[in-house]
Length: 351
Ligand code: RIB
Ligand code: CA
Image (cartoon, rainbow, N blue to C red; front, side, top):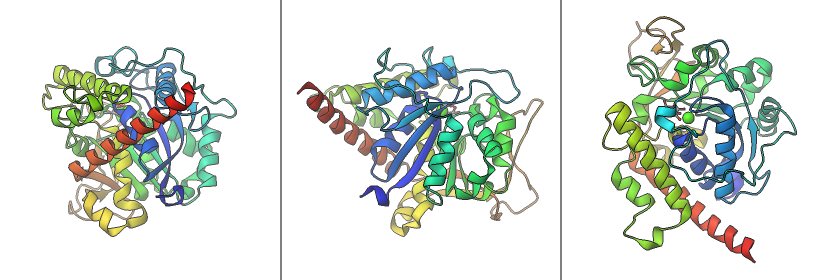
């Protein structure tokens, strides 16, 4: 794999226990080329999500500016801000032992909006924008620089769901935090037809079961006792306990965010063999985001009168199922690659 064959990606995220796995997959699997990160409030205040992104890149052996990190918005467009310490802990990435003062510093040479626009224009027609946090940054980007919409290959969003919620019984957290931003993105007819929604319907198929977690780090198998493996194992274990306590999900936590990265393989550069293996099951429908009332933040099918299986040209790819075994093999491959990279980085640093 050369960089030329990999999918250029910009990741907008709120690290975030599961966002950490999205960073891992995007940065360390050769199918993807992570160009940059923008952070947003959500799981924790933006100051924490930015710190967590920098600290993760530090531990993962990144060099300064190798993957630039730009700090984004710290509150929704209109709603009061809220966070999720009950799921992601007080730091925003519970369970992770991360450097308090990362050697990687946030980039301030331009705003996150200018950085996203530059990356999109530089990789026009190929770049995919992944959103695994609230959609506030993305909504402001397309309002400030509408010219980027035609240059984006796909937008892949972890958020929303059909007939399922986690923030409320109707609404998923990323959408519920800022339903107006979510509507401005998901209703945009220049984008909706090339938007993938990795919502709860599909992410709850990708549970980090104890078997998956043992493949990350098996305490009975010394060769897997690297710091990187322990870090991601601890992040997954903390998330598992949060989901056990808060949602009574005991088999393992849905690791939502890396699916928004992985699903690109089903639709980008449609390599038939790979697309078939990903086995992405979806419906392609226009969505509406409910703005107020008991169902605030719910994502619904806009034209409910149409046959459910009818594909709408400007419809969003609403994820329903995927080859979960292949997904985990990609995440674990990225973890292998990260482990080898960090070992080399630490060896070179000690010389
Ligand atoms: O509802 C799950 C989503 O909200 C995930 O992206 C998680 O990290 C939080 O941002
Ligand atoms: Ca997230």
